[in-house]
Image 1 (cartoon, rainbow over the protein chains, first blue to last red):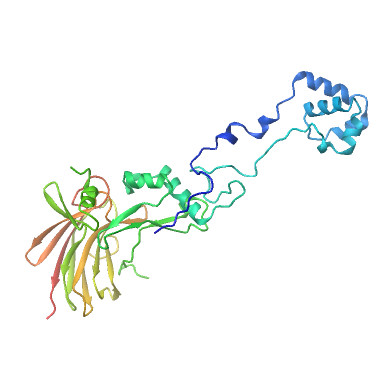
Image 2 (image 1 turned 120 degrees about the vertical axis):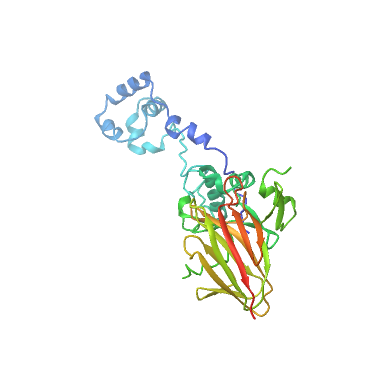
Length: 192
Length: 153
């Protein structure tokens, strides 16, 4: 039976937070008034200009810092532009916060690489989303959507058996994984 | 009233090997008595060209020999095997064989799903297995094979 562990994070939840509020939107564009203030501040010192140009700080940030230091912008920029107390906190995630079907099976989420059970869950969810559904009935479709392997009743043994996966460990995409039912039969005309 | 053939099998309890479906008996697995040295001749009467079909043959104890290969479960596939094949039962403790149908879709080999089942007709010394694969409505014409057992001396 396919061991499928519960995920640490909810796999099915959408990427809503990060998708709707990307980091670029958290640092708003400078309003015209701020830009003009910034231009005025740069005027008095060519030294501060030379330092200020490569700095990634937004015009708003520069203007705010200038107000805080009451015009002594040179001191601020010459020391450490990145240490500005007014620097906005932009939380750019190192990886997406959730996985959804269509994303790579081995995608790192919240700095955690998926283990094999998580990759299996992702594979079944992706398969349910993609599928040629003719293989599976509604019950198995529901299992796959929930990240579980399809099952069948083996009338020879009287037991349920789950579908197995091969190639999952190295796989990044669903089409790199093979599904198979437990099967011990041999084709004597195709035996190797 | 069960919704489909698979439900009908399930309603028969775990391991249901046959069920009644629209007035006829349908088997998920069909058992035939054999013994050591018996020869099983399987002749393909018809096979759908839509996808590869197979008849699986498993002996309870021992092995089967076909095409020089010894195995406990043989898969007689439409796309690899000749139309007529002979399997020899090898094993002093062998008492029966199980027969069931299988099919391949998109590289995945399956049995006992959805609409899968077999209608079996007994014609004198042979059985005619009319098989439905698991796709679409049950149609017992996806694979039709004749199975005859020649008893050893």
